[in-house]
Image (cartoon, rainbow, N blue to C red; front, side, top):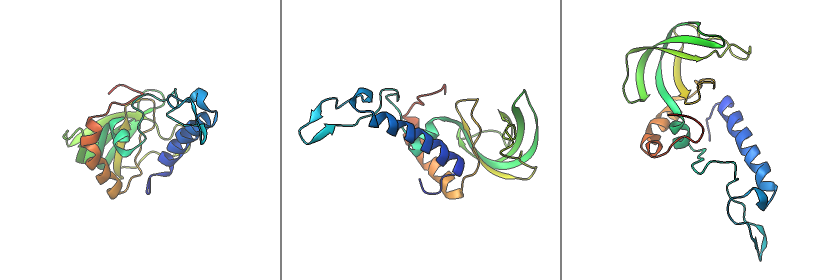
Amino acid sequence: MTGWTRHRRATLTARMTALGVVAMLGSVGCSRGDAATPSGPPEVGRPLHAPANFDPSIPGFVACSTKLLEGDVVRVVDGRPDRMLVTLSVDHWVKPKTGPSRVVLSLVDIAKDGVYKRWAPGTHLRLVVDVDPSRLPEWQFSAAEFAAFQRALPKAARLSCPYGPV
């Protein structure tokens, strides 16, 4: 996970903490290995509440994204409540593999809670839009991280996202 953004690390940390708590509760929360082994406690498996295709890896992240693209902000304006309309001049499409050179995206307003400021025109973004339209977009990625997303596309194509439509 080296190089992941603070926001992504916090999300992943929260998910993994929740999984760890369930795993510590014992075999009641596990999907396999319910019997105690002679050498110790029950084998810890995937928690029951995690979908069968739960995958916190980079391909799993890509599978749960509708758009991955790189480009420059042209303009950001108010959209529906708690949303913003972002116009981007796209340099590079990753997912889908191709798209228009200019796109308008309706995204959760990153400034709605006062944590982030909206992007100024000219801001260069490596943007990831989640399959869940209520999630904040993610944009603080290095070029190497974004290249890893592109390399993960073939494996991601064989996965389905456990928590949202594609």
